[in-house]
Image 1 (spheres, each protein chain N blue to C red):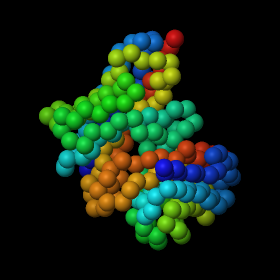
Image 2: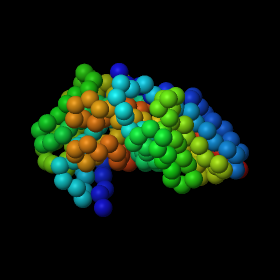
Image 3: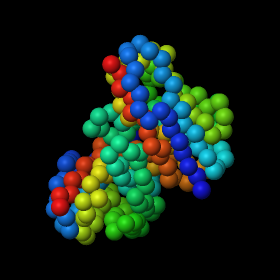
Amino acid sequence: GDSVTQMEGPVTLSEEAFLTINCTYTATGYPSLFWYVQYPGEGLQLLLKATKADDKGSNKGFEATYRKETTSFHLEKGSVQVSDSAVYFCALSDLNGGRRALTFGSGTRLQVQP
Amino acid sequence: SQTIHQWPATLVQPVGSPLSLECTVEGTSNPNLYWYRQAAGRGLQLLFYSIGIDQISSEVPQNLSASRPQDRQFILSSKKLLLSDSGFYLCAWKMGGSTDTQYFGPGTRLTVL
């Protein structure tokens, strides 16, 4: 079945450092790919998405490019802030039937230190 | 604009007690609705999804059940809670049809003692 693999955390960075969180996927079809962010004690918020190969999703300085040849959707940000500290989830849409459920990675905790 | 509500925000229940968590969506009609569970330090596990009133599909056999008595209301229940039911429960919705993006509620943290 479909699956998503993320790099394990926590990832600890200093403010203004460059961020990369790796995400690779396995899927039989052509899924849409997502990054969600979860701040402490809260639900998930959609950060960005890409629906087809070579699409780049971007939001709040974060970006990720849908790479079909490497089945990857790595999250990047050029300069992180303390307020970016959160858990980041990579996900893909499941094309089975009509449920369109999301398959999530295990999440990567990011800690940004001042 | 659409909003999604969940309550209660936190819940502490003894083993063997019943459970009822509620989720409601405003500002849309006939949404697809989902219940996920997030165990401590883990990813999200899909529990139930619904494409319409009284149309519920279960993903994982367990002692939980779900109901959708109204178009924009989704309820997660249990007759007898287990310790392993502890976790963070998230409700989500998306528009029906081919759109993929799901939007999540604030979650309910359940602790079973």
